[in-house]
Length: 397
Ligand SMILES: *Cc1c(COP(=O)(O)O)cnc(C)c1O
Image 1: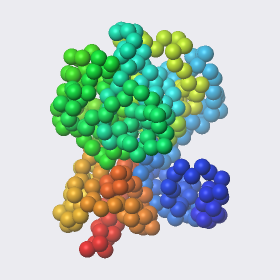
Image 2 (image 1 turned 180 degrees about the horizontal axis):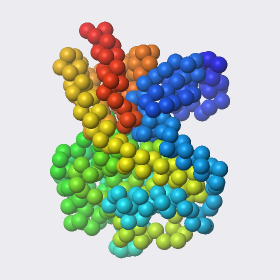
Image 3 (image 1 turned 90 degrees about the vertical axis):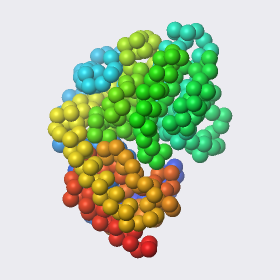
Image 4 (image 1 turned 60 degrees about the vertical axis):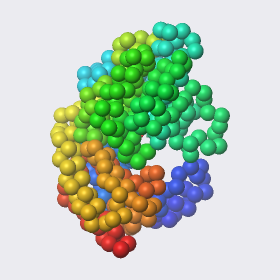
């Protein structure tokens, strides 16, 4: 089988919603993946922050194998053992008291939006439903999460958007304060914006939002779908800023590569989700939550966060080195292994050049090269990528 054989059929039978790179990946192990022709790639995309433990982590694979032979699915009409175990772990290691499970990030955000509206109705009566989120944010593709996403290009063609969403720039407290109205029920932010180009908040920003929420009786919602599960060197990105939310969403890396989503909340807020108010057939499914238990345990117990911090320091130093050498690199920024390199030009060509040399990287908002490798990546592997980037960039001068 050749890459081009699969690609030809892919172009005939799949909805063409993705601009795909011309390789067919068939196998993965740790930080490496292989295409159908046997070519090896070092992976700095990790399924866009899904494969934080590396590809086919043995403990996750083992948990899936065991669970698959025991019980694949039962309804949430019944209690599900691994679902309870995963919720217990999440509660133990976060601000949250309760967890609702679903199947993806966008669904986790839908649940968060519904929960915020319901809580507000329960406590303040109707007419208080508005959510303020940030420009350059990304919260998902279903209609509610899309309406919460502060990037017009994703809305185009799908109007009218669900009403009740407003956007302000990240870091602009005056704009946030001005946007709050008697109809506002919550503020929703990614602690660090990922798809928007790796945008970190100023040190005091989340704390100021928290204070504002307390003054105006609003809920603070964090979307940790991409920056959670150890990506930034702590289990959750909000831990860097010491400011917990009322509601938090997770997905991507939560189950080590299996589809899952989760909406976490404090007891006070979660009380508004009463029987019949929300549901998901596959939510908390035995297979995905068994994988989640294995993935979360490995993340906490196997030195993953420490490796992420160490490799991050090495990576940032090496990329700063490139920045000194090439004036078209405007900035290198990031936290843990959520790393961005902003260029003064389009980055798409670099992504293709890297692919040819056996490296998977990604580019967001046209000019920001983004590196989100598995958290088990090592300095020598990072050096291989930096060397390739250096060679590619030196051809530009
Ligand atoms: C990926 C992502 C989503 C959407 O998750 P899906 O599983 O693709 O629906 C939402 N928010 C953030 C921050 C994301 O990175």
